[in-house]
Amino acid sequence: MDEYGDIDDAAFAAVADAAEKAHKSSSTSRAPAPPAPAAGSSKQPVVQPIPRKIAKPAGPSSIIVNTRQKGNPLLPYIKSVPWEYGDIVPDYLVTPTTCVLFLSLKYHRLHPEYIYTRMKAVGRAYTLRILLLLVDTDQHSDPIKELTKSTMINNMTIILAWSSSEAGRYVELYKVMENTPATMIKERQKEDHMSRVEDFVTSVKGVNKTDAMGLISMFGSVRAAVNAPEEQIALIPGWGEKKTRRWCTAVRDDFRMGGAVMKKRREEAAAKGQSTAGLGTAVPLNLMKDEDRVAINRRLGIAAPAKEVKEPVDVDMIIDLDEEEALRAMEDEERRRKKPQEPQSEHVADTSVNTPATTEDGVLAALAKLRKQ
Image 1: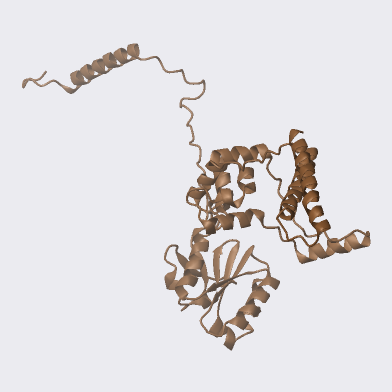
Image 2: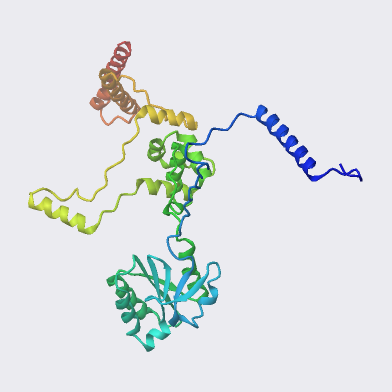
């Protein structure tokens, strides 16, 4: 230490080394010792990071537009996706496998050979080839028929647009839906039985889900609802005359067979010598059993028609009644004859007096005997 009380450099270095050694000894006692390095190597191996794969897009992120489409009025309406000019054969390259050819009907009337040259240049280079047709003239019927035939021959899809904004929207949607799966627009099949029954019933025009539930709860099964008569269908709450008639017509109408199919069947039957009268007639539905119909009638509160009880008829009794009526007629006739008449002669008078009395006694005796039997 000097005269001013300051420590010299050598002493300060010795104190610093002693403190550092004390610190290292304390930390070594608390932490485990690191592994000894391998012989012949003084440095530890460096661990390299694993490279991460980045998913590359299937195609360009923007729509490629042919330079000849500069000034096309549909370009300002492509707003959702970017687009850029490029050296391509079609007018618009939406995806790597989808291309679009644009055509205006006014331009087609002036240059009818233009579109056929473009179709030939595109060829079969793309999976989906689209002809986007802008209908900007009133006389469009014949050109559309002609172009539709040409697209069918060249295996292309034709899309009609009536404005530039609509045409731009079509081009834009093909790019937006590039990676969209087809299951998004596919109808989802319902798994539960009741939902399928509802879909079947509501397929009839004018029948909604509420009507379907009423039909199902009333009859309990599709078979019972199909075979039910129109009077029972009309008793469902909310089912009017028109809806009932539509349902009955839909479930009872015959299937229509194609003319060519039926003609072929008739020719085959005629060749075999069979009758063709029954061809084309509908097969009747499997009707319900009597016990099922009675059960449905009870559920609907419809009383079954009363059956007439037929009593045994005695044939002998019928014959006796006929005989009794005949005897009564004879009795009435004799009573009329019994009325007093003017005698024409003595012999006639005696006969008219004696004979009716004898006949009347016989009739009365026969009636008394018949009643006793």
